[in-house]
Amino acid sequence: MKQTIALLGVCFCWALTTFAEPLAPKISDSLVKITGDQFAPATDALSGKSIIAVYYSAHWCPPCRAFTPKLVDFYNKFSAKNPNFQLVFVSADHGQDGMLEYMKSAKMPWPAVQYEQVQTTPLLSYAASTIPFLVVLDAEGNKILGKVSGFQGEDPNDVLEQLSKKLKK
Image 1 (cartoon, rainbow, N blue to C red):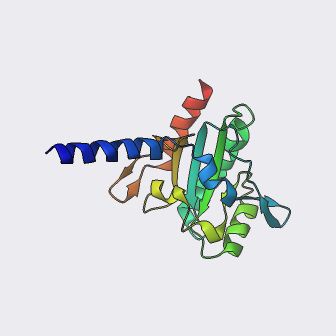
Image 2 (image 1 turned 90 degrees about the horizontal axis):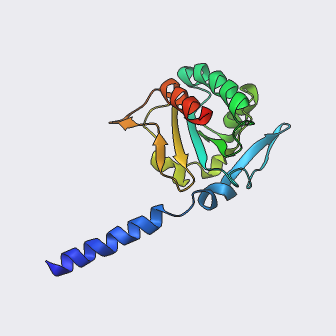
Image 3 (image 1 turned 60 degrees about the vertical axis):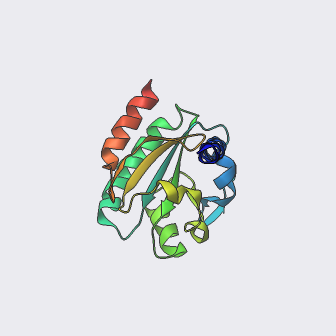
């Protein structure tokens, strides 16, 4: 019994230290942004950010293509007024070319996880099984907004509305 309690204490302390680490150093090296017609490193994109929205989407997904322009408008409106806010795109496209074309055609101004690293990024642990999905994290990676129920993620329009209220405070 004492061994079980001690083991649980060790696991609990390990979990606290694991999740208490800042998120930015875990993913910053994998971030890119569109520069002209190609990707460029965006390793400093999360520097000083305390609210990080993560957008899971793909060009081949009609609901994603319908939601993305709303997100672009939101980002353009709120990012300058909220320097502690950043959005990161995690692509579910079928290749880097599809991801690049989607980001260019949708005029996504935010950074993205490099296509080659999408399957290994720590951000996958927050994803729903469906897209589009939007989740909002704090600097340590704790979920603030964006629920997953079963396989279904919360409607990104609802998350965007909640985020709007949070950023206006």
